Amino acid sequence: MLKKYGKQISRLERKSSSQSVALPLLAFANASLLLMSLSSKFLSPLQIFLLAVFPGSIFSLWQLQILHDCLHGCLLTKGQNEIFGMNRKKLQANILFWGSMPSAFGYYLYLKYGHLTHHQNVGDEKSATLEKLFDSNQKDFEDGDVLFVAHRMKLKGEIGPKFNLPSFRKGETKEIKMSISKSGFNLWKIGRPIRNAMAFTTSFMYERIMLVMNDLVVAITGKNFFFPNKPKEFHDECALYCRCAVAVRMLLWKLAGWKSILF
Image 1: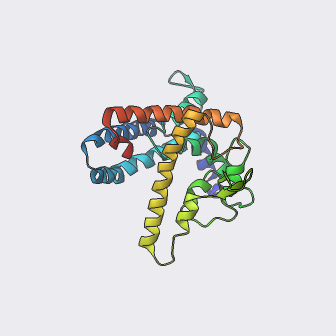
Image 2 (image 1 turned 60 degrees about the vertical axis):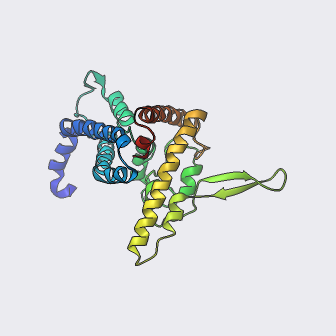
Image 3 (image 1 turned 90 degrees about the horizontal axis):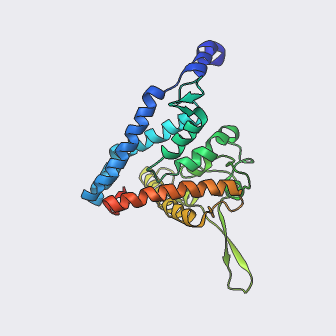
């Protein structure tokens, strides 16, 4: 493609952006998610589920894809160091931070620390496994996409995270390895699409619930215990984001009750 259409592609890479369309679309998607969350106060759990399926899931996907463009630098107008009176990089960071709310999908953590490295290490089981990702002491994930694809793809290498639990023997600990995504995928059977869809859906939803709970733990303690070896800078930024995310959810709860969090 580059050999055949190199000039046309290069021109697009240098000049094109989706700011005029995607930025208003992100604001619309997030405002819609916020309003639907607030409206959940008046809905039954079944109605909330249906609303989350459509159009909630579409708005959530728009949020992810537009933030993905922001991360890659093709959302904002190119060639300008200042946009809306703000430094381009600072604006990009703010869009990534605040534009991922309200959400319980962990988009910010994944995009900020895991997606760009995914393009470097995709498919390399020596550089990126679940075990290495959770045990890593570097700021960025080796391949953040591993966290998502484990729900639907057989991955090579050992799993993670690891937890050291107290043993019945005095002074000893027992190492436990667990992976919600891997456990869910292990329930899949060849030729059983309905079973597989149910296993994927339940494991993914359960993991999202655990993420919401973990956000509260990180907000209180200032540390993400799933990644114990990562540097202080990583944990500080995680804590800042989680505190803001928890504040947004608490406000939604106050305004619309627990059903807003269910949505």
